[in-house]
Structures are given as C-alpha cells and as structure tokens.
Length: 157
Image (cartoon, rainbow, N blue to C red; front, side, top):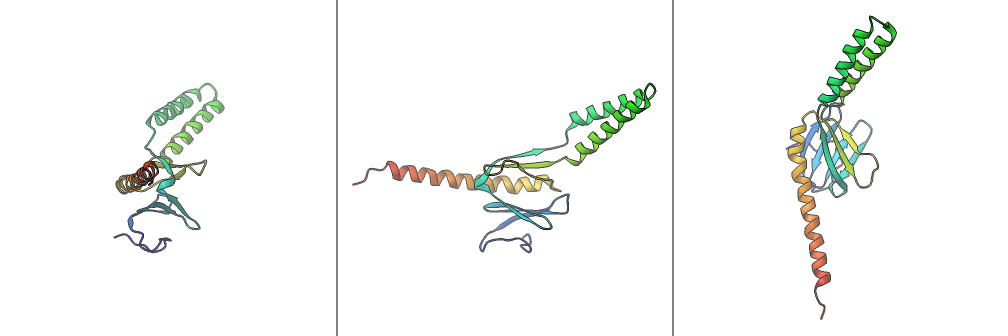
C-alpha cells in the first residue's frame, strides 16, 4: 500500500498509486482524483473534470529531423562557419528538448485552458492505475445521469 504521508487526502479516500516524477515531484492516483505534489504546491485534478489524457512518447520524427539539421550544419560549416554553427546549435537544442519531453502525460481538463503536464518515471504503472479509476468515475456518472432521467420521465401520480 502506498504511503499517504504528505498528501492532502480526505478521510476514507483510497490511494491506489503513488509514484515519482522526473522533476523529483510526486504523482498520486486516488479513487476520485489525481494529485500532483511539488515542493510548494499540491494540484488536485478530479476525474469528473478530466476531458482526456494523452501520453506523448519520444518524438522520433522530430529527433531525425533535428539530427539532419545537425548534419547539414556540420556540412555548411565548410562554406559559412557562422551559419553552419547556428544550424548545429539549433539541431542539438531540438534533440535535447525532444529527449526532455519524452513520456509527457498531458491531462486536459474542462476548467483549465492549459493542460496539466507531468513527466512520470514509470508511465505504464501510472496508466495501469489511472485508466480504471477514471473509467469507474465516468461509469458512476453515467449511471447517476440515467437514474435522474428515469426519475424525470416517470409519471407522477
């Protein structure tokens, strides 16, 4: 059972998963929400507010294009060293940025214009706990919605 220490959990709220992020922060999955804990802030994302979750693994296309930019810059250094060096630096920066953004998990919500972005150490373990928890909350919501429409449609005597 994961440790509940340091998380602002409600009484009776079950903690399904607690894992680390690459930035030395933590992520936790409970029955009703996702918690992202940093040094100074605790962000809570209720599953009822989640629109979609995307996992962006390493972008190989961008990495290959960046490597081509480095090669082109190295070749161009024979003709114009300043421009060639600029291409090499831009390509290396792009490769570094692509590598740093590998396994990015974006959580799009209804209430925030920008998605919540996290970089978990173990993406598979996070998804194994997160997807069933969100599906359970959505199923519960749809059952509640059906119950309300049934009670509205029932004739009153």
